[in-house]
Amino acid sequence: MMDSPILPLPIQIVLDDVGWWTSTDGSAQGGPFRSGMPRPHVPADYAAIAQLGRELNMRPQAAMMLCDWDRDLLLRDLPEATWMGADWDHPWRQHPHLDEAASILNRSADHLELVVHGLAHEWWGTGSMERAEWATPDGQMRPRHLLQRHLEVYASILERNGLGSLPDIFVPCAFNHSFGEDGEGIHRLLADHGIRYVSTPFNGMRQTKAPQTDHIAIECGVMTVDRGGGAPSWKAVAAAPPEVVNGPIVGLHWPNILHQDPSRNHEVVDAWVAALRRIGQAPDRWLAPDTPSAWSQLAHVDCTQVRVTDDGIDFDFNALDALPDCVPLDQFVIKTKGEKEPHFLPGVVVLTSVWEEEYRVSHLRRVRGRC
Image (tube, rainbow, N blue to C red; front, side, top):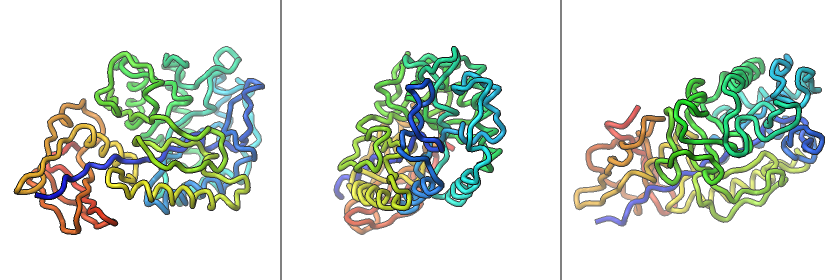
């Protein structure tokens, strides 16, 4: 009988606050915190995200702030969305950086994922800045009819810049979020706009009922994953990569992978690539190629039971099938010792099987999996 096979914990990278051009923290003057980068952002900062994804063969999440991309001043019609209210304006709407960065993002679509994050991150419903755009610090959702307009305008700004339609991934601003309110909560609104994937720290999420597992909360067809903690400071430039990753999300902010000199961004990215490659080679870790793969793998880690018999490897999917309907959960990865391809009992098909370092990585699909 073979050594115990391993369902490795997936790792996905999430980069918050991508999209700001003006970077300085304006919170002391009632404005947004922005990215905190001590220099303005440039197109090379977008290329850094693409480099990270390309070299790791992943699609890191770029959680986008879009007010600095508002070419048509659409946010004047959403006075609660910015610190200027109905007088909203900004210096970037005619700037060539917009087209340059959009071109980089489009050319790099195989190496990153655009993610809904926010318009200006905070809330100015009374004229003064409050945290945060989608919910209060205790997780109470902002007025639904206004958030509906925020999502619509967010989609319009993306389309106006040639960046496609509204993504199906969401990261709440300031991690102000809630779970358990069913049709009355934020997940119903997100689902109505095609958003199915969310990540946020569970220890700060308002919960009116318990998540289905320690890492997964499913509501209205939306699967929210625990981002965990232990991240670098949100405005730490060229942050040192971690030695270990204990959860499914490497939660970062944009400056963490950038250099003060944008021509040297690649040096910071190289350090992150080396660290994450090393972490991903551990038997119980796996660098997921994208968000759907990561979320599906995590569900199997939490729910699927692996059994080794004299006839081969078998899987018990009963706990997985007990989860509420949500995103596709039919594909997963298993690591086995030895170069020889393992034998799997009926119920799965092998999509790929590759020898990597000391383990064989088999990418499987359930024959009767969800779709």
